[in-house]
Amino acid sequence: MYEIARQINYKKKINSFIYSKDKSDFFKDKFSHTNFNFFTFNTNAVEEIISLVDNIEVDIKKTIIYIAGEASFCKEINAYFHRTKKMETKRILTKPFWHPDKKGLE
Image (tube, rainbow, N blue to C red; front, side, top):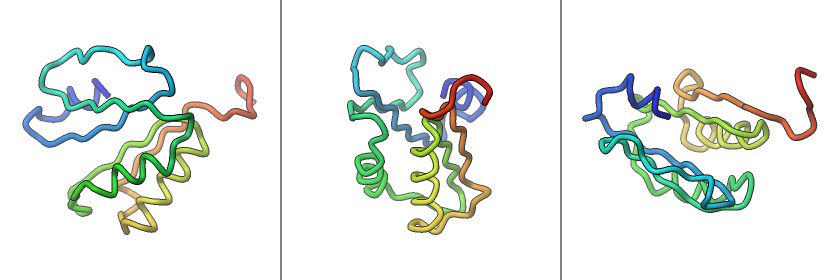
């Protein structure tokens, strides 16, 4: 998130949804101009994230979505933005960092 924020002009609007099931995983914001939002949810809280995102007005022609996390979570959130919000796939960037059934480089 910091690298994304560093590359984008701080005057541009950035929304973030960072969540964990444990508040101790959160860290104090390193920069005062970033807009990191922290939430406590159970693992893979797809419905909770969608309900938060649904309330935000976005211009689907100018917005870029970056999704990172567990593979199935990324897939479901990606599908939501593509199918429900009708966003172009090139505006949805997905980075699955882990898959619970895989170990190492399987």
